Length: 585
Image (cartoon, rainbow, N blue to C red; front, side):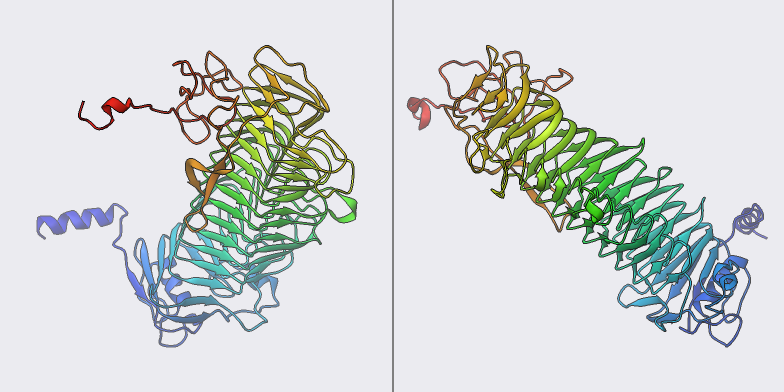
């Protein structure tokens, strides 16, 4: 034996194996029958590293190539719970217990499931190993009687990657209508849609993740549903307290917690563990049922939530069943939460149309066009808001812009309306501050509206300023102006427009950040803190909401750069002496 052969033999003896390629040749669900190589037989050959049926032996991390066609699972007694729960790969679902790549044909449709109407059981169960699925559709799983994972189930300790995979038309009676992840799972350019959890124990119509991590890149979670049962939370995604969730450039859209659910929280996403929503879009989801909260996103527990460069739009926490109140149309949070460089727009709930909850920070974001059927159109709850625009939100009762305790710093609250339906006696077009300790610094509250007979346009209740705050109309406010505050004056804000800043959201559902600049000559220009605009922790703010440098010297008689009041810094105007303008001096 030559040297290369000796080294290869030693490498194999050390426990390594050359991977095998197994080509599926039939769409029939054979198991050691017939002459073809079925998908089930190919998995069995990989699991056992032995030839099986018409398939060659697996060896190491094998690749199974699955041809175009509908691969129907038909083996076993669909009425037998023993068969449904069997993990030896012989009946009902396909059980994977080895390192494996399952690859479909990129240019064709590879579907695995059963459309007969009498199938019961999931489609794939990853019992152990590192497994990748590529370019296939997994559909029609139906897991009965309190079971989880209609399409895919992964066990603890597994590593599973879905690339170009669609999981659709699956259901489960207990939870995880589409996918149950209990290991490490990554979705790349994949789609989880039109799955349902019925009689839910914990929900997760699209995906339920526990005891591991779930990462979604460039993927879409849409039109999933939870209905019935004690808890239908997270119609799109349910993330348990012992799981970590990351979304990057991902769309979560049109998922619904139905009105038959007892706990209707998190129409798009429910998370009790750490979560990061990055450059993603949460769009047109709905939470209904009893105690609906977080039409788009609901967060609870001790994990931190980050919403960054994301769009949360058109979500609804519907009117609660049995007279229960709905809260947080876009986001409801009980977590340590940061919303940063994002747009929260056109969401609705009875209370807190945009965001509701406590313990959250909003930084460099726009909160706009949200609607509360009762109080707090834009923001409700205990929060700190910095470099943020709260604009054009509506409350049919009190607090068009916000009803929030905490500190509002270098922010603009404008164009919001209380008593928007003109049917009641709502007050505080900009802010409603009863029962909250709300403090302002370097912020503007102006040009809001109290519709109807009221005149408490900008504020109602006690607000406190730490300096450099402008309130356009103090009627209804308990506000003692300090030496650097300005009251009952025009703010001089320009119209709402795109004045820079990032585009936010998933690449196919992007939104621009809209803001209102001070006009030249406005009482906001160069009227901020002379020592610099600062955040609630007294840290110097070097930029405004969209990244303009703070401070810029505005168009005033002096040459001192002082930060402007509000979320936006009017960029410095460079004046060129006409003598030098033509370059011929």
